[in-house]
Structure formats: C-alpha cells, structure tokens
Length: 195
Image (cartoon, rainbow, N blue to C red):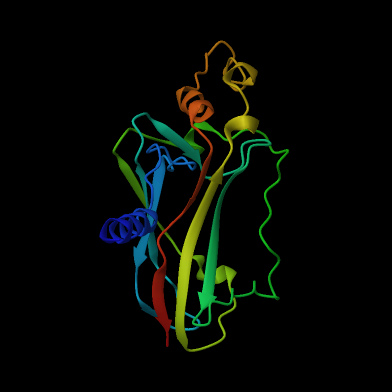
C-alpha cells in the first residue's frame, strides 16, 4: 500500500511539472527593439518630448524607412491610452495624415541602416495627433510594422541621376532594406501625467 501511495504521489508531481518543449519558440524574436523615454509631466496644450531608440538585436544589418516605400508597409504607429486603458481619439479638427503609396520609393536619405548591436535615437512629439481628456495619467507606446515584400528592388531604381546624366547612382541602403526580415514590434509603455 505504501508503494501505491508513493507511485500516485510521484505521478501527481510529474503531471504538475510543466514539460519542457524542444526549446524552439513558435514566434521569432524581433530583430529590433524599440525603447521610448522622455518627459513624465506635460500640460494639456504642451509638448510631449519623447526619445525613440531603435536597437538592432539581430546578428545582421537591419534597415528601416521613415516613409512608405512604394507599396511596402513601413509604419511607425503611436497609441496613447488614458488611465482606464481607453485609446485616445484623433483630434476632430485636424485631418489624419495620409501617405501616398504611389509617390514612389523612399530615397537613400530616408532609409536608416543599423549594424548588429547598434542603436539609433530620434526625438518626436506624438501628442499633437491625440485629443487628451484633461488632467491625469496617460500611457504611450509605439508599434513598428515592416514587410520587405513590397520594397522596390534595386534593379527597378534609376541607374543614373536625372539631373546629371552619366552620373551613376547606387542604393546600398535599399539593398539592406530588401534583406531585412518582416518586423512587428511594440515598444515599452511610457507613463506620463498631463497637468
């Protein structure tokens, strides 16, 4: 009887311990990390000065574009929520900013390349795009989406400068952008107070 009790306890203990998988995750980690930081107090009509830091966590160079590249989806999207986690609406008095997808490929100056382990920071104020309810705590986060499938290939770009015939053009940043994997990453949540 003692052996039976021991076996039952051993089985119960065995089932209570989670079984480790093969060590492979079903979701691939993002090649980049987004970190936002900045001021923690602002006024309703004031600026919200934030710093966005993009960190390359992969073993290869990563490129990202500030604008849509033809039909490629490359977007930085802000979300601000109130203390009850309700998303803030866009201001009704201003039209939402739109990007023309037919405007053509992004220029080399609009593409940023980060080597492995490197970071790039820029300052931004996303508060103009949202209507605050008034005083209180708010949370902001940033999501970056990128799909290289629609990026215009280097072969389709102009071979020489239209203003200076005979001057060859090269697109090293675009080549890295085409090799960058799909990205869907969300930053940390930054809490601030509107006074």
